[in-house]
Image (cartoon, rainbow, N blue to C red; front, side):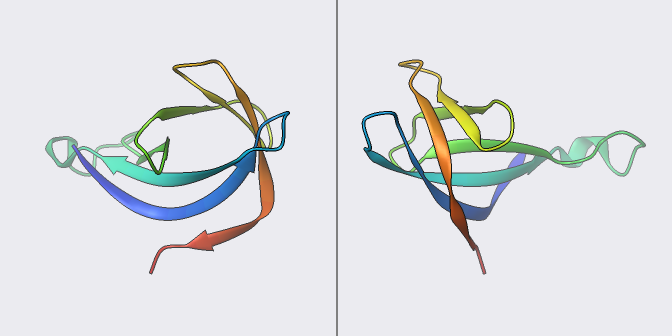
Length: 78
């Protein structure tokens, strides 16, 4: 399975701390072009902690359960 960085953005917790979140698309080359094998989007902090997407602009840090809200501006990877 290969992961490609497709973007990054900042998110804030309830106390105003800012987190840098990286957005990856993962695909499994072993699956080939089979129907239903669309890339999966995953999220991680810049320091490596896993992030789960909730609804809309809300995310949750897996390790601590901290809820983050995505800021409006996104930077796309080039």
